[in-house]
Amino acid sequence: MMRKTIFGGLLMLASVLLTVSAGPAWAEDLKYVGSERCGKCHEAEFKSWQQSYHSKMVRSKDDGILKDVVAQWGNGGPSKVNLTGTPATLNDVVYVVGSKWKQRFLVKNPATGGLLFLDKQWNSVAKRWEGYGNKNDWDTNCGTCHSTGFRLTSYDEKKPTEQKWVMAEFNVGCESCHGAGSDHAKTKNRKPIYSLKDKSIEEQTRVCGYCHIRSENELFKTAQGNPSEHLPHPVVGNSWQPSEDWTKWYPEHVVIPGVQPEDKIDADYKGDLAGMFKMDDKAKKSGIYESAKHHQQYQEYLQSTHYTTAKEKDRMSCSSCHSSHATEAKPKMIVAKDTCKECHDASYTVDKFMPGTGQTVQGLFVRTHTFNKDPRPPQTTVSGEPVYNK
Image (cartoon, rainbow, N blue to C red; front, side):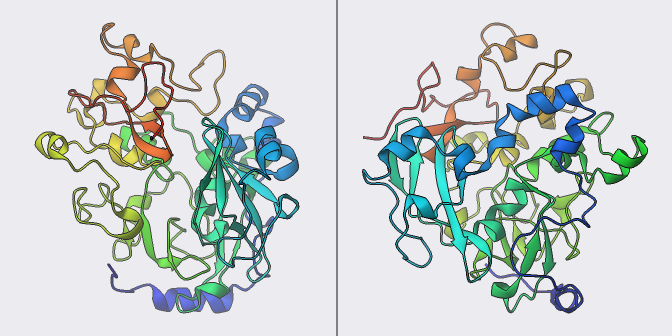
């Protein structure tokens, strides 16, 4: 579903003006200081952030590889690089992605300076190997959300293989949600740093939604020339800042079902966008579409009465229930089983109103965020454990 290219001239100009070494690098000119620096002053928040999965999404092999993976590598584990078919061993792995539900494995791509996936992933819950087929550089398909301060420094839409990029740090660091922090670190002034406090429900929710979506970008492609899942800043050379409304970027080129008005949630999408939501009679009758794939919480939540209600006092954002850095004053790192009871009676439970619908690995389903009044039967057991496909 190609859309008209209206930013091509600007991007080609930017590709001429901004030229750096290919591949990822730790940039000193991004005005990012890194989460470790934030932790020197914000110790409690930093320590609790370290316990979150935001801080552990991408790790070096030595720091993050699971013991089960090492033990089972030779028992049906990865054997080749997805893109090239080149044989690969455990020794070739540089970084691992994820751990809670699944773990994937990255090796260097000498052609671009980026990172490529291997052909298997480890199901952490079922403790088994599963096929995985992503044939794109991790950096140019996943880097926007799995790193902090990602930016393209050079891009020509006609030559995506030659694009160049940098990032401030791996993982969802402090500055992913609070913006570049160098001015704040130097002056101790609060104004340069972004805070969710006193922001509208729309803005608070949109910050989380930047990553918790499924989209397709036909303008900024992967290094392999495929539509990318990531959403770079509209100006090549800049990084997205949480105060910016990304939902209005590239309307001619980015397809975000359920977010942009022209991208109807129940349209007939192809490719990676196909089969995003439950499109059965139940969904069509209620007008509420639960996800069938993972990382679509924003697209689900926009349908929820928690978000759409006209009663301002009853409106909620993601941070009403979640906190990326819990403290004693605000202990909600994750949603506990009885969270709903803080506002509702005992009949409102997470298991009932947040059934698992979006599959993330075989047999494991992520909880929906539509809060449908007529919820689906959960595809997970009452305890939250997965129901495995037979």
